[in-house]
Length: 111
Image 1 (cartoon, rainbow, N blue to C red):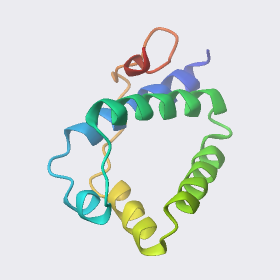
Image 2: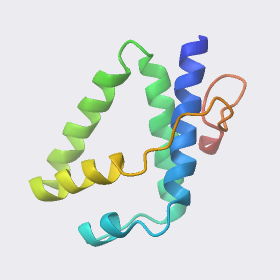
Image 3: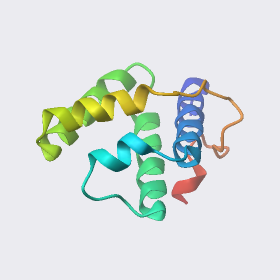
């Protein structure tokens, strides 16, 4: 695994920790009819972090944009999708190389 890929996983793991720690997520809570249980949210975030690592730094942005478009199609509501974009940008943490990534660069929360 390259250093860049490990850093990508570490960055995603940092964001996962920050997303879990943000309380309350008022916009996110009010914009959706359903919410994921915390355990499912952690598993999905870790799986996403690992997929970002697998895509590699040269395709990371393309992967994230493609994933977002596929999820927007599932939501089917432009206003809710725009609110999710705003929520994702709000208080976006600075990446940390000390994030909870394993020695192979994969997010430990997925294990």
